[in-house]
Image (cartoon, rainbow, N blue to C red; front, top):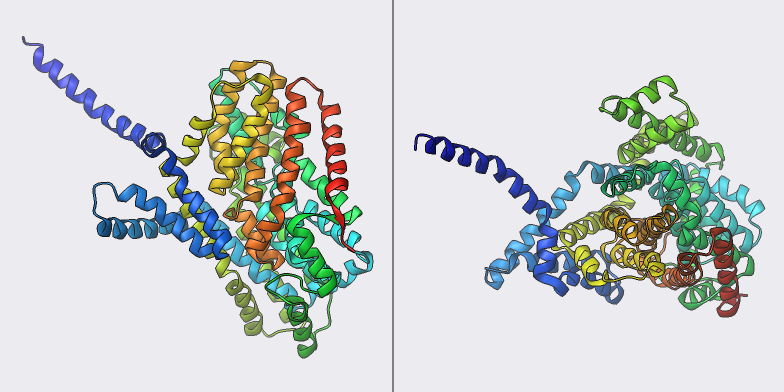
Length: 570
């Protein structure tokens, strides 16, 4: 009897200690709870946003209504319609504020604005025109113009956001001159953004990818070098490789199909670069008139130096940001590596992986803008106040982009809370034949990424599920690597197609193309490449075909397919 109070006290202490854990578990599992609760209804927000985007051609309204529909699902139960609407509206505002409060998102917004200011300065100083004139000497045909755009996308390999913002703006005047549609330019820019950054061994993506791979292998009790696994997945990234190959053969053959061909025909025959712009009223023409009015002589250094500073400082910022994060962490092995061999390939790779990419890119783009302002003043192109005003004008041009990004992040937030992705996984992942698992994972990743507009989120959801599932079906490392590549590639394909994806949005903005037109013209190309990826890539490899035969087979199928369904655009 005397021990009873002690027992009661022990039980009370145990309950108090476990309450936070239970609450945390409930918070972590809220997606699973809502997925089981709402089931098919969890698909409403992304479906509403995507369908309305195509019907209304207004991305902001579509995204906002999509967010509202998700918030209503979460707030209506237990409330009347009026109070539910009020609570849903408040919830949407809170999500937008939380999106901006997130350090990563804030860094991306600042980076977008800073790059917008830099690009406007470079353009108004005549740097973009000088580069365009130089490149146009080599880009004398429609073929070479598209290939040079493709090469420019490969050069800016380290970040998809920077790629989307810089390449489209830089190449726009060249493709305008060659009467290549803005839709085609946006496609090339978009197809060299995430697909390139996703397989680059030094990029802003690799940290996320390596971390997910490492954690997933830990869950199955297998000790594996995450970077080694990542390298081995590269040949199996069929979509990334094939979409880059598609751009080259489409440019060389001058063959297109679907809505893209209609856009190209308009550009060639009528000079209509996009439905929203006429060739007599393009940004490049306005810039040329501006330069003539101000008496500014175009100089390549006005573009090469600021953009060179942007790229160089970005790489340095990635390194030192990651270096600081690792040194201040508790991984003694990495700390020892950085201190003993700070400039080795392995040390640089690990530093890039641990960097805060959004902050590093903002730092580099802001410094590049300052350099451009100093150059403009030193060359007496602008006074200091005029240079700052030009920089501010560039920021204003991209405010709409920032609004769309905030809406896209808010939609992603409500989709995550509803458990949309988790419901899709539960719905589609039953008994799976071993040879079909890579294809099914690719399709599943594509659907989730398309619906949510985020490749990062899709990777984070699927990787912890796909690797254990692959291991349970076939524990051979080669098989697990194929499935791992399917996760990474499927996430990029869905993100590439999605109208609510940030890279899709930035690509259309950078190319000066109507966003919905970009999505409509790009999607048939992406779907065609994805079909080749499955039929001639993942299925043959899943059946045991070696990659040195599988990849050439897929590339040959892509070439033949384009020859059959593509038509010349004279």
